[in-house]
Length: 330
Image 1: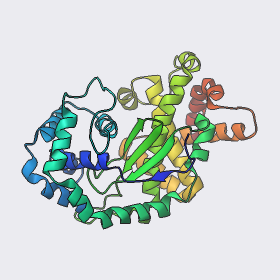
Image 2 (image 1 turned 180 degrees about the vertical axis):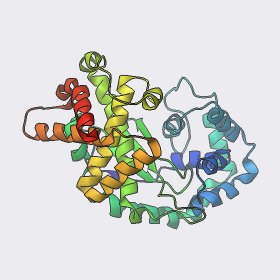
Image 3 (image 1 turned 90 degrees about the vertical axis):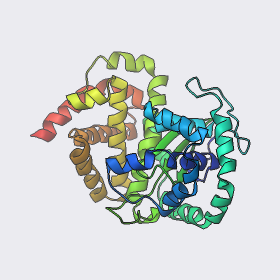
């Protein structure tokens, strides 16, 4: 059972995969998406393993990246390894043969254990900075009205290695992991310390945990979702193309809305408004204010006892969203 306290920890399996990632073309791909300065530890890790770029573990990971394998799958593999033996504990149908043996050899050949010991103060500082942020709110209580009692252990890892520009969410063995980098800065500036931008940390955590939890919740309530899925959601063509199924669309809208609501409650309304404006500007999520309005309506009616869980409200969601969209657009 989960401890109902979000755990902050460094996982060596994730650190190992990040070190291998630093030897692929991933760092260059990040810069092509948006120029920024990765954390000094990430850059030094890449230099540390530079002479091993042709190692089989790196070639295998590069092949997976070239095939479009998502980071979630790659880090699910990493967290499925035993430690310190690095043996795959449960078969993953897509996983390359002998990759666990390659990763174990990479770990030894690059002497990562010594490197992590040498740079331990950086990782410990990241944990202390993260603690200052995470203790501000109870994520278990926040998600409860939406998905019921969260049975999984929530774990967050401050990541000062690669990837430096994105969070990764993984569900595994009764735990939900969020591997979170600090907020990137502009140009050649170092990234922000974790505790100097709580909104960034909470945005990533709520988004990753919320996605994992909602995907599971919709699957558990498939009988309720099936007829509702026949009612199209009022989203644009671009959003529909990137989220082809009703479940994909609802989960994405829920995540955006949940982040905004959490920002307003845990930080302040200004952060929520800034987030909504940014998602509209960057991703074109013009419907987000309507989503927030509908989710707030559910929370109000849940608090009044009209609904005992989100599944009871789901049949109303598409119509409520259409009405809210029309009202807000007036």
